[in-house]
Each structure stands twice: as C-alpha cells, then as structure tokens.
Image (cartoon, rainbow over all chains, first blue to last red):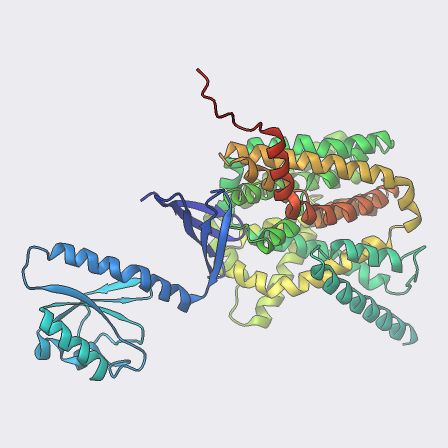
Length: 160
Length: 397
C-alpha cells in the first residue's frame, strides 16, 4: 500500500492513499490533535468530496470498525491449518459485567478453554493481554477456540 | 481626567464598532480586514467622525499588532516545514515574485514615487494574505485537496521572502546609503539563517525559555520575549516584525501550539487596532484619485496570482481544475500588504498617496480573493468546456 504523507505547513499532516476504485482516501492530522477523514471526488481526484471532522472517540470507533475484521482475518488465515479452531471477535459492550474489570476476572480459559489473543482498542491491537488487563466498554476481544467454547465465551461476556 | 474619559469612550466605541463589523464580515464570507480599514477611514482625518485623543494608545497598540501578527505567523511554522517548503517550491516562489511584485513596482514608478516607493508597492502586491487564504480553504473544505499543499508551500515561501524583504525595505526607508542597504540585507539573511539553524537544532531550549505551566506567567513571558526581540531587531535595522517572526519560528512543538492559543485573541485585538490606525492615517479624499490605479492593479494581480498558482500546482502534477483552484486561492491580499504600506508611510519618506493606493488595493483584494476562490470552479469548468472541442467518435487512422 502506497501511503503518501504530505506536510500541510502551519496546519498539520495529510496521509492518504489511492484505492483500486480510484478514490483517494486519507486522514488529515491537525496540530491540535483533531483528525479529519477525507475522501476524494471520483470526478476530480485532486478535490475532496467529503471531509469529516472526528474527535478522539469517533476516531477510535471508526478504527475499530475497520481494524478488528482485519486482525481476525489475519488470525483466521494463520489458523487455517489447525482444524476445529476458529477466531471470533467479541465486543465488551458498554454495560457488560466485565467493563472496568480485569481480564483475569472472566476466568475465560478455565470456563471455556478459549484464549483471548488480543484486545483491539482505539484502533490499536494489544496483543497477548495479561490477566491484569482492564477492559473498557467498546473494546473488541479477539478470541481463539472451538466453536462451542466461543459461544459460551460470548455468553459470559454478555451476562457474566 | 476629563481627557481620559473621552479617550475611553472613543476607544470603547471603536472596539464595539469593530466587533459589529467583524460579525458582518464573516456573515457575508469576507475577511474583516477591509471593514476595519473602512472603519479607520470613517473615524480618521477627513472621515465621517474624526476621533481625537486616542493616538498615544493606538500608536503603540498598532505597533504591537504588527509584532503579534508576525509572531503568530512564525509560530505556525516549524523550521523543518520552512526548509522543506523552500526546497520544494522555490521555482514557483520565484515566478510568484516576478509576476506579482512587478505590477506594483510599475504602478509606483508610473506615479513617480521613486525606487523605494516602487519597492514598497512591489511588496504590497506580491504578498498573499496567509490568514485569509487559510481561512477560505478551511471554510470551503479544500484542506484535503491535492493542490492545497502547493498553496500552503507558496504561502510559506512568501513569508520567508518577507523576512528577507522587510529588513531591506526598512533600511532603504530609513534613507541609508547603498552600502548600508547591503549590510542590512546581509544582517537579515544572516539572522534568518541563524534562526533557522537554531530552531532546527535547539528549538527545544528556546521553547523551554518561554514555556510555563502557569498561563499568566506564560503569557507575560511570550509577550515580553516577542516585544524584546522585536525591539532589538528594530534597533539593528532588521525591522521589528521580522524579529518577531523569527522568534516565532524558533519556538516549536507544543509550546508553539499553546502560545498560539494564548495569543490569538490578543493578536486579533491589536491587529484590528493596527488596521484601524492605518485607516485613520489615510485621508479618504486621497483615495478617488488613485482608485483607477487600484482597480488596474487589482485586475492585473488577480490574473498574475492565478497564473502563479496554476504554475505551482502544475509542477506538482495537479490537474487543470486543481491548478485553477490553487491560483484562485492565492489571490487574496490583506494584513501583510498593509504592514508593508504602514512601514512605508510611517517612515515619512514616501508619498502619502501610497497609503491611499494600498488601502484601496487591499480593500479590493481582500474581497476579490475569497470570492475568486469560491467562484473559480464553475468559471473554470465553463472555460474548459469552451476550450475543449467535443471528442469526435470517428477513429483517426
């Protein structure tokens, strides 16, 4: 992927790439920390058709939406040879009993023999989280296990 | 005491009036600068409502306004950005100087204002208003466009050119000999280079000198440093504005961001006073005789700026529509043209007509600029359609 980084003197930095469909998609990072998502006009690739201001929360939400499936896809790819094992992503929904609790509190391995291999938060993946890793609402857990184990894991995360 | 009361009432009325003007200006989508100038014209000698007794304050305040304008401009850029901007856009930057300084110089020469007058007027027509341009690009949502970095690099180049140009102008206005002028040029080039090196290498330490977690202390240190450096630069014949600009460049990182946030309201206040004072010192009666020249200059330099932007964007591989947008974005002139004209007029060696011409010119350009940036797309599309013959379906063998 060819990401172009362009400094915008006095404002910040622009990073974008061109998609196969011919759109230029990117992000402007302003000095004061604001982010702007930009998508180019299909008629005129030099021009921006849409620019959306995003605050920190919105940025991480978008990054989650985009980032987690990719991580899952990677893991699924790696485990293709291992039969009977699947990767799922399970959310810690705001209001989940484990929101604000440590990973160890779920006793996930003991109860379901499922492993939590990563936590995706704010667009960054935290690989191999330790038992003292504290969950926030909106975290996405990438979990590996048998289908049955994953089902019960999903239930545990929802209901405790 | 009685005089103080009058001065307070007058100042209050001026500020309040400016507040109303500023509100109106952003409502109709133009920069407030031309309205401030008009306000100054109205309250000045020969205006509708001549004010007296506020000069002691406004004189110093307008000087501070220039210092803060340039100081914040310097804060916006990091030294690294300046160096890359310079490296990337110097050919377009030179085209910019040739195309846009020439009309001003020519008109000044035609009006018989001598070489120094020509140099001052060249600066007035050369420099785009980075404030207006950045604001308009943001308002129109064009910051992500591919031609925008080109436009911004042009502004960077111009601001650096100012740092070299202002000391030369200051020296020549002070009536120094040719040798004195050369030494001023030498000093200013040396100062610019030195500051860039310091900012690139030791920017942290300069920032640490003024930085403070306590807002009050921070504000006082910033203002103190800016005025000190400006004053010393002024003593060295390098021009106060340039000193402040270079200090701004030397301050970097989070300190610069915080400083900008802290000083913006002050800058807006003092810069507004500066524009008003410039208007105050311009006799409205002097404008009609130069109005035709101002109109001609406005037309000519609109075309030359569009050509400059077109050229600069073409070098970066931007397509036609983008080139047209880049050109139109650069048209606006504003605060720095007035800064240059203010320097020229306050020196007393230049005809007062220069102030009238600059005022009329900036009034026109500060309005034409944002309008041009808005209407460029439909206009360009029409022109492109006219020029491109319909593609024939028959395959040519």
